Image 1: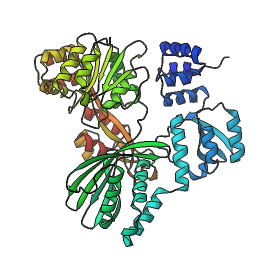
Image 2: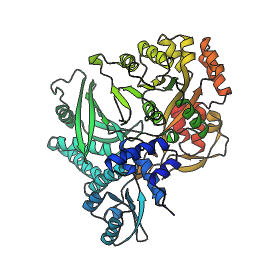
Image 3: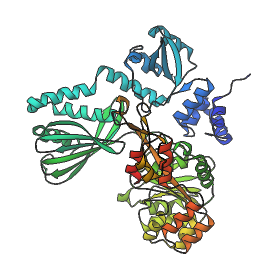
Image 4: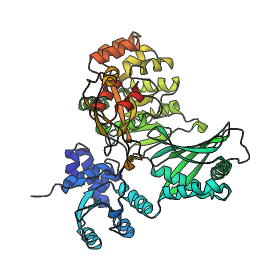
Length: 544
């Protein structure tokens, strides 16, 4: 029996179809690449999807290394040079067997050599090639250079001799520690006696380090110099940026200063390389909502909006939506600020306000480019809203984001921008409203029985098994590991279209949507609490 090809497994999972396979085979005639490599190069599959398909093809496990922590015994089994050259990562050792993450499970030469070097049996698992390479560099480096120990040594020295501290080294260690801890922002805040360093992880600020306030001016000056800021100016706010290299990866860091009571407060935002895009299926939607969204994305015209506050994952959802639309058959144009992920088969442009290229002017230009689908990064003003609605009424599918508290709140937001009721009602296909909640760490979460508070707030029956955050080394003792979407999907039915057209109150629109089967943000939050994906406390924080 002939072994199934990788393309067949991807097709079985619904990742690609005959069109994508046909294009890959066409490209193969010219390049002689492997089909999987072609699909990856064209952006038709992600590395994760390819690794998962490989796992099925070879009947082995797939591992997501996103939150993986390297194990000393496993790493010590193979030298870093071997791991780097062959793109393999030692995962764990159990009963004399070494688990090895690889993107080439059929490479018997490498596997046999790994067995001889480690003197252990080898069990292969698949993982994303990028994740494997990142972890090879990070895990082996941390094995030899424990960052936290080095920082603590520096801070211990600072207690007695603050003037002798190498601030350049200290700053570098703090940034490295932040990157390793999944930090988005570093806060450096002076008080009367100490300087406090807080890390923002998964949207929450945590205190991490303190050092004598005498050291503060030198630390701030060191960062200012690297960020091309004026070190002599300490009264006025300043903005700067620096480039930071860590383990063969470049990080763009934006720096901001603000004068406060005891000196200059500094915030450093770490802009890491963008993760590969999600699919609609793994965003967090229930199965019936997935089918509805997919159906709407195949409509020939109309507008799909994603609503939520800043930092709620709206762009992630837009990118997931784009992946559901065939870039082979349709001309897709985007205007973004900035471009966060590049799709090889999609025409992406970036806002340039200095050159007069803004969202509204981009859409105006797009209409002369024979588009099928238009993505507008954000509807910020009346001109952009008008151009987006006009495009959706002239035979184009328009995807965009808007700031609104919930799905029905998107309608008054468009009206505030000068749009008329009949224009909105005749254009809008659906609104996806969303928030981000922290996901419970699967390694340390603790089961408990719900009580009266859970019942009063979310209607959860007392005695229901729920899970609470605890904290362990894998989640940096926060109890949470990453974030997930909580969302509601408002599909504009005939009845809702009529309500919008007559200027109905958002409450009426929402009530009708619930009557038609919409699960609210709070309702989806409850589903995720009951499923053990997040905690009651976290849902309460975000959805109260």
